[in-house]
Length: 117
Image 1 (cartoon, rainbow, N blue to C red):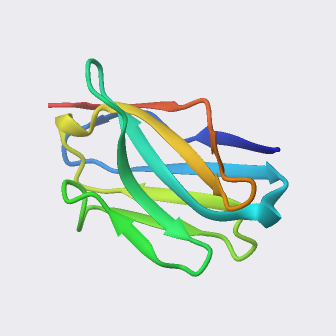
Image 2: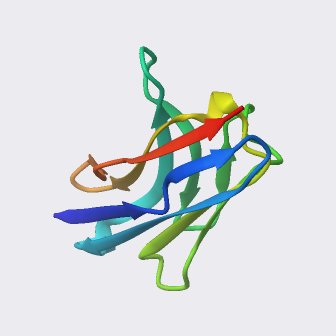
Image 3: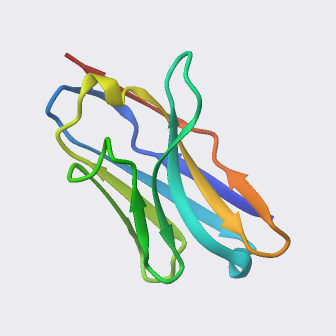
């Protein structure tokens, strides 16, 4: 079992910045990737960014150049630095941890990010 706790959401003006954090605990030895997803009202949950245990990163086109994912040395805390925020970034942001075996995805409870215009 893996537990994920997100923090750092809030309200920010357009052009501002926020930093989200996801603290993971539990059976981390099976986790091979962690990432951030978001879900806006009336829309499907979508990938924002992802980082593998090897350090490879993936970003959605909509956030490239504005968002940066990073992790601590132990790999138990993942951060999402969000700069130049836009109203369309408004969503609930979820942390996800992917287990290799057994194949399973763990999700955090989500944190609200609201960007005002």
